[in-house]
Length: 236
Ligand code: FES
Image (cartoon, rainbow, N blue to C red; front, side, top):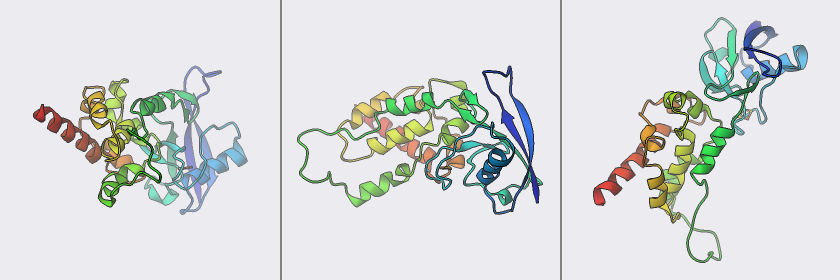
């Protein structure tokens, strides 16, 4: 069957504003949206820019808006959409477009870095690995599935109105270390998030959870941070 794709095109070097370019792509119902975009680029228009690498939902590089909803192009099949084989493909919102479907993710990764996304420990290094209990590992396991695709942050209504808000992905990474029993700066991490640009920017709208391609309960994890901070405040 033939599918039609209206793909957002914008090259800031030559275009004043974006436009949608129409492509007709022969596809099977089990083809991925990424397969179709590859077909466009390989067979019709090599100037179309988008990111993709693993094609299996691992690298997180092909998050984009597909028929109005943020998703990974490699995880969505043609048959997942009830739109008469018509697809509208747009870049992630919130971020600046570099070209076509490629956006500038530097602000996203700066916020990720700001939460110190690594274990901080005290004392001498152990001879073997730092042991973690199975219960503790299980508790933070959902957050370990994050592939930093930015789907949650791009979908978050708060990120759209407050550019300083850390956003769900960075907060989820913070949760991962706050709740890791081996980390030595839990309180410091919590205090850093204790404002409107941090955890209190989250208004529990669940969009992050809805779009997460790894099924992470992002909103619930962020709720844990809020609970811990309230607990801290009440014990002061
Ligand atoms: S291409 Fe790697 S997650 Fe889709």
